[in-house]
Structure formats: structure tokens, C-alpha cells
Length: 191
Image 1 (cartoon, rainbow, N blue to C red):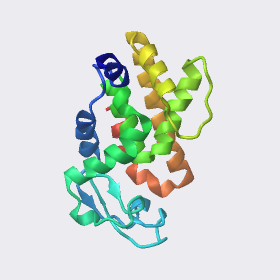
Image 2: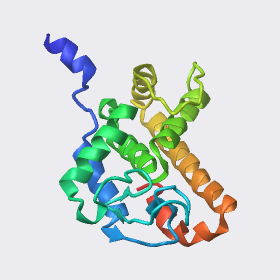
Image 3: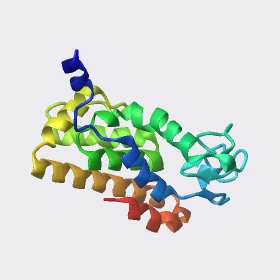
């Protein structure tokens, strides 16, 4: 029985609490910037009801929550349920890799974070998966095996950063007004 548990959750599994410390550090407290698309229930400036973001929990993703009164504990619960668990980050052996994927998923959406992982598996791995945002156990198992070698772990992590940065550049290219967030976004790359 203990063997089955250790297979499902490696002894060196990533810890969400360590990753939350990084994400909360990047996300900060309450902000109600009307030019931030995340602060609108429609996900675009001027569409829907204007709200706020606190600890990275935003009105566009959680339109029915009282964002202004969000607690760190509640934000952590939402992050675990909606960002950490769907990508199986607790099954990653590398804390740094799990944290980087988590941070990207929080900032760009869980499907984007998942697709970045899938792209890297498709580039470096033997199998090719559809870009659907859904990371499965087979992918995580391959990443864990691949990144046990330090040079592979470094390459995977750097490639993850490249794709994260590429996503931020795409956002800015599609809407130059988003360039005002570039220092914050690129400060997250490799953190």
C-alpha cells in the first residue's frame, strides 16, 4: 500500500505552499485598475462589470466572488483547486519547474500554462500531444524522468521561461496598451 502512495505522490514532490509564496509575491494585494482586462467580468476593458484583483484572484475569472475581501487562505484554496491540481503540479519532482508553470498559469490562464508544458513535452519528448491545455500523468512522468538529469532540468526550465516570455510578448503585440505591465510580467520569468 505504501508503494502505491509513493508512486502517486513522489517523495520529492513539489509543494504548493512554496509555490504560493512566489505567486503571492508576484501578484501583490488589491488593485482595481480599470485598464486591466482582468478587472472586468467580460475579460476585456469596458465589457461587463468592473471589479478588482487581489492576490491574483481576478474579477474576470471569479465574477461572483467578493474580491475586495478575499483572504490569502481563500486565494490559496482557489489556486490549488483551479490552477495547481488541473496541471498535476503536486506530482512534479522539481519545485522550480512546478512553481514556474504555476506562476505562468496564474498570470496567463491554466490552459496557457498547460499548453506551454505540452509544447515542451512535444519538443523534447518522444510523444506528441494535442495542445488542449490538459496535462496528464504520462506527461508529468516523462518530465520527471527527463529532468532528473541536471542538464536536462536546466534546459527544460530555460525553455519554459522562453515560452513564458514569448506569451507575454504576444499579448503586448496584440494590444500595445498592455506594455505597461511588461516590467511586472518579465520580472516573473525565471523567478
